[in-house]
Length: 190
Image 1: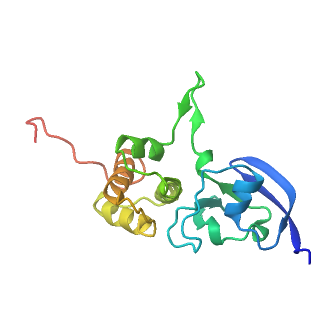
Image 2 (image 1 turned 135 degrees about the vertical axis):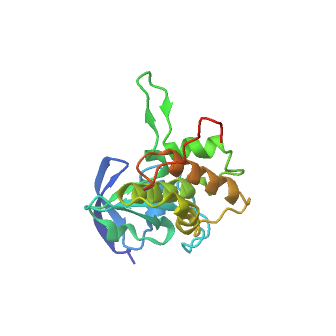
């Protein structure tokens, strides 16, 4: 018996893909890895629980949403815009790698050990930061917002403290993500 197929077109990391005939039951993770050779998205639990496979779906209204690609059927995403971990970094004028703010923060904080969950954390944090760019929060709420925004991501090496600290630092150091200014140091050093 020949499996049923469906034709899909996607924009992945800014590049148009398709139309491509895919099995109706093909998951987005498999499509990214097997059809596009984008292997940064990781297979973890296969149930959408650990979030290692998180990618970003960009909505037409400009909002983004983190989705587990291991349980998201690609056949239902015809016309969608998807971002993977490979789509975050750019290039500087000299051609050198220019990491996104969250990628750089994760390196600076040495947030990962095995790095298996890192692509999911990068995408989850990116969605959170984009949400805060549209709707900033008071600085006093940043810790809670980071915990709520990242709580579904599992790190088996227990890198949570460093991942969360990195996200918090990016939020607190990026203008426009919080509604109030940081406390100013007084002339007397306090």
